[in-house]
Every structure is written in structure tokens, then in C-alpha cells.
Image 1 (cartoon, rainbow, N blue to C red):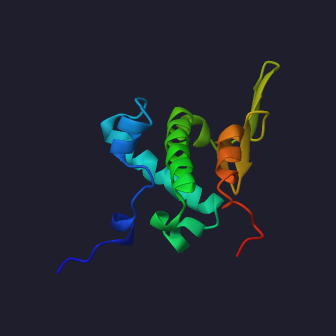
Image 2: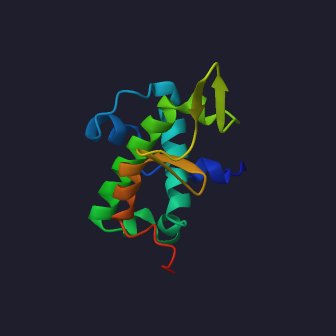
Image 3: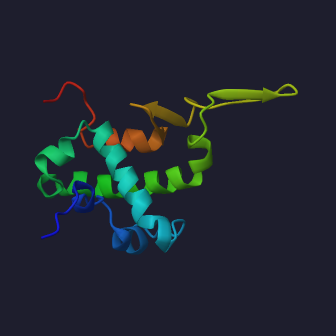
Length: 135
């Protein structure tokens, strides 16, 4: 009998059908879509202190489920679009007086080491799952 790996059992909060049919996403091709949706879902788990894993996605309110699915798609697109920048080790660099810095900016936030558009993070906070004080 072949054992399933834990990573094989983890399902992203937004699947391919949700991404293409409801979110109307087109940025992620078929060969990378599942990878980026799963990665974004894991990042959402970190940002919500694994509360979704703990109580189960199905036990969230419809409002929370809808927001989380949409945010997973937005985050997957964002991580795909910026994958080369996120893979860089440097925090900043400069050449001939022109510099570039990675990290916090007016439209991007980094929470728990996860870069995310600030407006998307604020939407995630609307679910009530991001507060550190909750048990």
C-alpha cells in the first residue's frame, strides 16, 4: 500500500476551476497554476496563524470563504508576476546612482516574511483571521 504524502493531501483554497471560472484569472498557465495557488494558500495560512487549517475551510462563513478564495488568486498572480524579484537575496542595490530597494512600500507590505499588496492584506484582515490576539 502506498502512503500519501502530507503535501499531496493539501488542497489550495482556490482551485483551478475557481481561478479560471469565478476569479477570471488568465495570468497563470496550466503548468504553473496549481503550484502558485498552493503556495499562496500556504502563505495565507501563515498570515492567519493556521486558523483556517485548524477550523477547516468549510467551517468558515461564506463571507470568509469568498474573501480567502479571491485573495489566494490575487496572491498567486502577484507572486507569479514578481517571482524573480522575490527570489533575489539582496534587499537593495545601486548602480551609477540608480537604486532599487525591496520590502515595504506604499503599496506592498511584508508580513511574517511574505510580501503582499497592501490592499490585498487589508482584505484578508476583514476575515478576522489575522489578529494575533485571537486564540
